[in-house]
Length: 111
Length: 116
Image 1: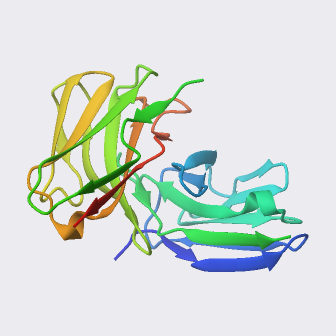
Image 2: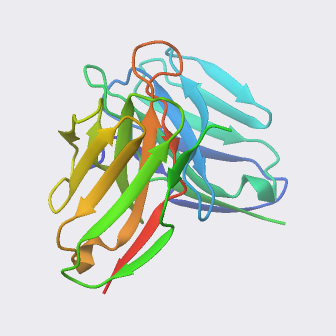
């Protein structure tokens, strides 16, 4: 059983549509990170959220950390084909220093 | 541009062979990690090292060993490869401490291993 559950597992949308990816846990996390992995490459960090309730924006991507620090979401506005990839959430649970990873959400944006 | 380099992008080995996966980072990071990535399972930690010659087991260490003789290099060894070790292997590094940026992983491009 994974500590971080991501949903949905797959998401296929048309260019210009919006999408949201969820990352949930029953455990409290010190922080949460979001990575994007493109085919044939390793994951690349997009953002780290640290404070409960924090919202961070990265161009068309909005990241939110839940008030209780047990969940996070990634919202993409007006998705573009360049947003295609595997999105992974990860974080160290409280009292641990090792990262736990979600299984990932594969996002496909069709032109 | 800082990076983590995995020397072999694709390998095909036979069951029972010894396999070495090499990883080098140029960021002077203290921590280095080996993960395997399988569809639907995400990234699972095999081993990590927080200093030269130091190592700790991750969540799935069985069938693997590691070596860290120099700070910049972390090797993953499969003593006797088996078909269930066919996977994508990702090396990563991070700095230590509690400052912003600590515990953030920089990944290599991955090594896809097929064991026949």
